[in-house]
Length: 165
Image 1 (cartoon, rainbow, N blue to C red):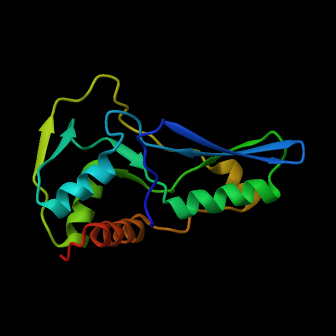
Image 2 (cartoon, rainbow, N blue to C red):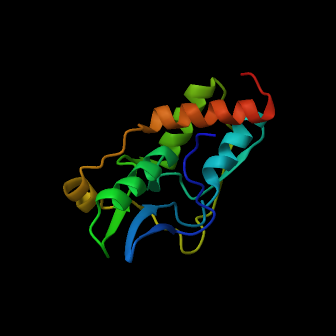
Image 3 (cartoon, helix red, strand yellow):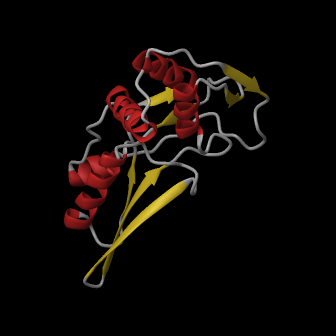
């Protein structure tokens, strides 16, 4: 199933590969709390006609990384990366939660009822990955624009629940 990285595991997920005796690490940037599972949650709410809670104004931004891009970055690091080097991986398009929600509503053709709650303690206003090293050293760039990735994730979610919309 195509999807953006689920961010409910940790703020950073390291994919490590052992190649002989060398360790290569491609680090994918994930959303930080409190919106850890917000993408899956809001797609479920959107398709299920349920309200969705946004903590804060929704103007906080994230750099969403589509899983296919994270995998291709990890493979590039494994095959061509320098031993002991950590490569940050990101989607390349910082987007506010409000803009991502609006885009999903457009793609799904369905409005989402958003409930705004107080900003959670410790929430980070902006997150993103500095991908300069992986771009310059390995020539890697994300290939899945946010709109395409969200469309694929919506399609997969619809198929999983049998929803047509």
